[in-house]
Length: 423
Ligand code: NDP
Image (cartoon, rainbow, N blue to C red; front, side, top):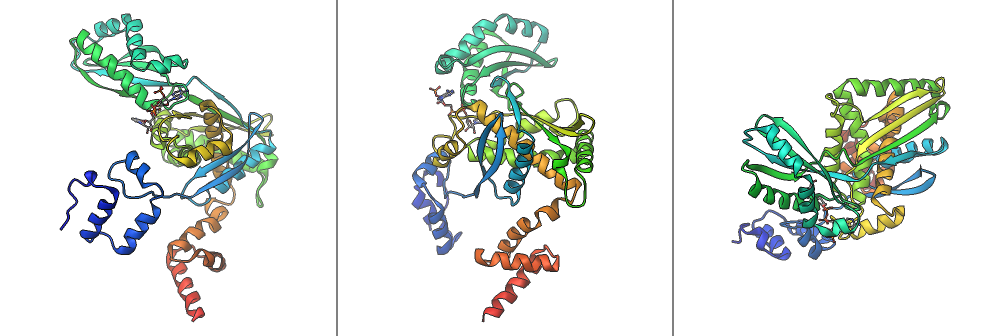
């Protein structure tokens, strides 16, 4: 009997067969893996032990007016209501004149960390004195980056403990996210320093705390645009400002506040072929930079309480080229749909999406509540999970709303009754 050892050395077909031989999958499950494998030759090159392509739904968000330009925003997410909320938030901002954004340089930090340091101050000044040489070695390791106007810009040395020192290189990665480029540049510098300095190098790798690649979006909303059926716009705005303050004070609330922001940011990151884990880790590390974990956005009443101003700053270590951007055909299509032409423009769209998402979530939370506003969308997922065919979903959702039930068991019961009725 075939076993699963050396799985990585098998061809794709042999892997599926091995799973069958081990009775780990049925014939139908093998067919599902084969059907979902949209491009096995590419998938096999992209990752290890490739089985299939795992699809996620992609949709379009509308109403994005950013720095006076209109954007269609492709979003990839499995979560119901994210795209509806995104378009809803963006529509309110559109009526208020749109988002205004700014981005900083696109620098990534790379760390070379020394351990067993005998004299941290001495090592610090030795490294600082070598700045020009170290930057030169870094740039020689990836000369094309410098030719494009990027490359290692400057360094700083941080004493983390009496025996632990971090040499940080700020590297302009131009249109790429830059993780691989930075890592190879760091390794070249680390190799040089191993010869020059007797202190051992513990590790060298990029830092995901990308606080030199920041994007900020601002919107100013006349409060009357925030009105909901049972509550005035003024009241919604006051409560949104209070909820924003709460997210600055309470990490339990801040975590959920930020999750809502990242619902949108991640969905765009995936649609654009970006590493959403890098973006997530950057965002959460940045949220705690002042000591306490805080909400990433802030909402304040301005102009005699007639305007609610929202601001969001995010570290966005993203790429317009590199990584999987050229490999995944849908990423090229999504670049085309948004008509984004540069990494800076991608950052502007992503930070605006984060702010729109946050606006929609806070507005719902302080008025009708998040569940009621999105119940029909959430219910669709529950009804599908109960085993409904897509054509049956609307009927069962309506019945559940009439019963004011949201649970899976009710969906299953209603579905069973529906099927009984057919016989
Ligand atoms: P790549 O390794 O793909 O490098 C970028 C590529 O883009 C290079 O080949 C470069 O060409 C090319 N390029 C073309 N035009 C430009 C331009 N105008 N500006 C910059 N580059 C250009 O990707 P990255 O280095 O960006 O690394 C991103 C990947 O690294 C992601 O897939 C991520 O998942 C992964 N990663 C993430 C880590 C983390 O976050 N901790 C760790 C390790 C990997 P040329 O070679 O000619 O310069």
